[in-house]
Image (cartoon, rainbow, N blue to C red; front, side, top):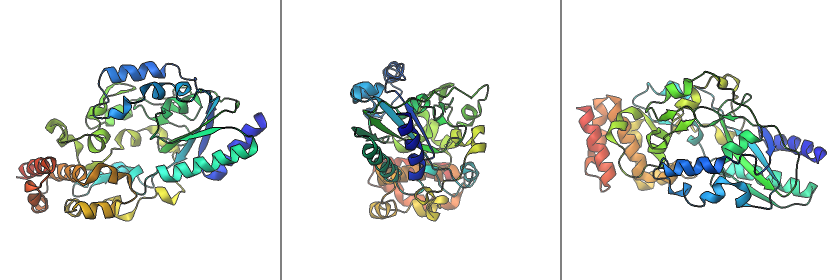
Length: 342
């Protein structure tokens, strides 16, 4: 199997992946307990999907008992500019780097399937391909496979790629040689913790998603806590602050995949334009984008919070019509923004 694993690594890079590692399905037995503790504390908030199939999510062997190896793949989406430089541009919306083009699930899954088909042709076996919509905890598996380690911000950090990469998994019945888990290289650094605008980290390595701007702008249903709105700044979909602050990004590389390059209209869009979108406009502009998933109302809510944080009274004219929007959350956000701009 050593020769097959070597060819598999070569093929993974040929397909377009940035890194590959292999681990056993039961390589991280402590994951299930950590997940249960997380759910018991209620830290998942509105993310009810985390409770569903928690047994599978916490244990890959429960998800597919026949699996003998987990092939973890890293897909680089490194940006060509520092996303933090957009934060002072108060009349513009800051969209998380990963969401500035098409939904990454499609190109990532195509790569995974192509590599999986190649593996079956080399050695008959069964496989299952997973992106992050499945009940699989990719981050602990990525660390077990040697791709990187879960940093103090809870995301995976690579000494080769920094913070900017997606994770995909191929489960297989083949018993492939396993890689060595990556040790923690964070040391005394706390840059990511200090960068969080909403103080969402309870402690190093422990995040309260209910205070995280990525959660608030994507998963939060209804109005956001007024105490957190002012801290959201101009972030209208996701937040990259803790990722961008990581010193290991000095080794990050700009993605070579055009699917991950920012669309010009989403690089630093004007809030004045975005807030005027009706449902049809929203669906047309964000077709094929992960942003479409949250719907027009949640997106406009986020834009209105950014307008309220802009300090620019000229944006009040664009926000004012939404003070009587049919959606209560949008209406609340508009009135909050207008009050802030007085």
